[in-house]
Image (cartoon, rainbow, N blue to C red):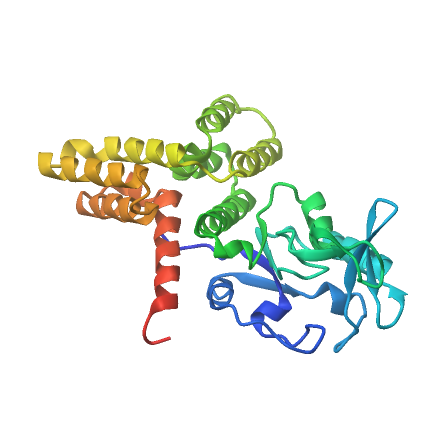
Amino acid sequence: MSHVRPLLVVSACLLGDPVRYDGGTVDDPFVRSLASLCDVIKVCPEVGAGLGVPRARIILFRKEGHIRAFQPGKGVDVTDKLLTFSRDFIERCPEPDGFILKGKSPSCSVSSSAILYQDPMGTKFLYKSKGIFASALLEAYPLLPIVDEKLLKNPEIRQHFVLRVFALADVRISLEKAQNLNHIMELHRRHKYFLMLHSQVALKKMGRFLAEAKGRPLQEVKDFYRAAFLSATHRRPSLGQWTNVFLHIFGHISTFLKPKEKEHFMKLLDHFRQRKIGQEVLLELLRNWAYRFDNNYLLEQSLLNYASLYTELKASLTSPTR
């Protein structure tokens, strides 16, 4: 299966552009490696808002229940400039498949890691908050994958983000190309286990809709499917959901396996339940069996393919040649 190239919005400083307040950059090997597999739109809200490089430090403070952005060194409130840039960016940017922004930034923090003060001079700490630009994105795109590089340090969040970004790209591109209902039904078939991992209820609901969609306007079907897919895959799957989907995939191929192989799989699944091993062990084993038995149905499943891509991406970061 050839992989699509997601459309990803990334903070420019994470990709080496010298746009931070002091003209510096951030070296994040994972973000750079992932970005190489995507079509990237780089963004720096503070530069886009005309604040320049280098620029006076920006802090966040609360005023009358609202979060404002202020440059204590210049005595200037820059909230409106950042909000105007945010609105303009959202209006002109094609809807991407995901965002990776800069953590701790007063404009870009998604993980509530930007310091919020009680006063505009930054002398009294209040709590930590999201950035101005990030908050605008979260409001405009409540179901899209939006993270900062701090959140991606969490292995479960990182895996879910990568798998979902590629799945959403596949859905977006496939729906754009779909010329009839059969094309959308094939897309649904390819994402069966990815959807099952997140919500069996949504999987069945979407399947019923497509089965009864003959005669509906094609664009209406596309719009429903895109919205339903976004909603169904929004939350990170639990350990129990992973276990369930492993058993379903295993059931699809178990009749071809030897008793010892079945026993080995169940032992690994038990280790997974106890969090002794990660998902990639079981995913790669199932994918190898799909190759061994020429099971094209499994080999075309997005869950197995994008999980394998994620494993390769992680391996490239620990390669001695890097």
